[in-house]
Length: 110
Image 1 (cartoon, rainbow, N blue to C red):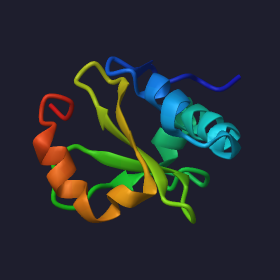
Image 2 (image 1 turned 135 degrees about the horizontal axis):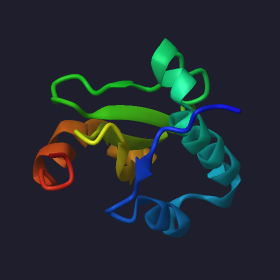
Image 3 (image 1 turned 180 degrees about the vertical axis):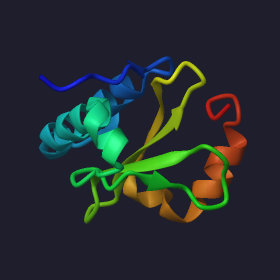
Image 4 (image 1 turned 30 degrees about the vertical axis):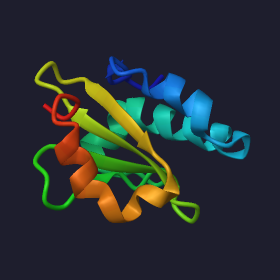
C-alpha cells in the first residue's frame, strides 16, 4: 500500500472546484489529488497525471494540471509541516494573470 502524504484544504479549494469545475473534469481532479497524496511520486519527483511543477517567478508555489489541454489547474504549496496545502483552483481564463493572481492573494501563498 502506498504511503500517503498529508493534504490540507484550509481555503476550501475542493469546495470551489465543486462550484466552478465542469463535471467532465471531476474524475481527473480525483486522479490528480490522489497522485499528489502519493508519497512515492514526491520521492521520485514523477507526476505523470498532474505534471506538477514550480510556478516560475514565485517562491514555493507549484502548479498541478487538472486537465492540461483545457487549462484547468490547481496551485499548491508545501507547508513546513511536510504536508501539501491546496491554495486554489484556476480556470482556463486565468492563464495570463498567474503572477498577479498569486501576488494579490498573498495570505493563501505564505
